[in-house]
Amino acid sequence: MNPEEPESFTEEENKITLKLRFLQDEITCPHCNTHGGKLKQNRPILIRDLSVFGKIVYLNTPRRQFYCQHCQRHFTEKLPFVDWERRYTQRYEEWVFWV
Ligand SMILES: [Zn+2]
Image 1 (tube, rainbow, N blue to C red):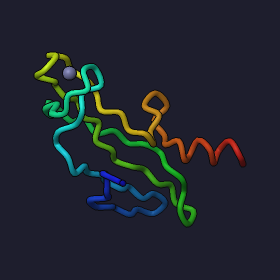
Image 2: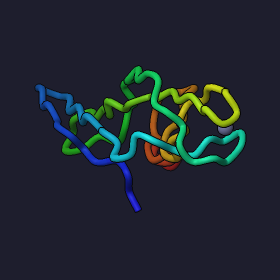
Image 3: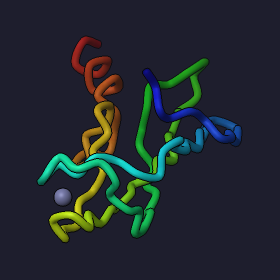
């Protein structure tokens, strides 16, 4: 299952930016496992992905913060394909490692 899908992309001379959106506005809280965390804010960041046809690809990725009404805590959504600290995808990381 793949909840995120490209919403749009812009192509420049040597750079492609894919804008991702998410289909659900409620996710499961990692603290108490209750489904129904409410979206509080979204601060998209650019994440470097693999190059395609010699162009650098960036993912404009929503970084969403939620609030859980059940345990009253905030949490940030984790995306399995992104290393938030280093700001590129794990796909890219594997590729760099093997070159
Ligand atoms: Zn909770």
